[in-house]
Length: 134
Image (tube, rainbow, N blue to C red):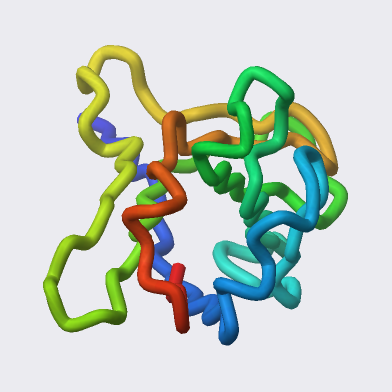
């Protein structure tokens, strides 16, 4: 008899954007990046676009990406990004890769700079004006 065991690694990173209201209007395609952080032997970063990444976002929606920041090929991962409402109203927005059908498997990031997009992230007017935590 034989057995194969696939190793899994869990990790998390909290990215807080203080003064979120000041970032609104910085322009479509302009982002705020987290520091890089390590999970599973790879470096990652979060990119937050207060006015959206693409012109079709019409500056009405924020865009959030998680990116592979280190060298690697075919890195397989599952992601969950949460926009936390800091106003106390508890209206958090969760974008989960875990909701995919299991037969679809993990998302594969092909190379450094590959990103996973939480789409659509959230209408920017629904986010707390003071602080966002990812």
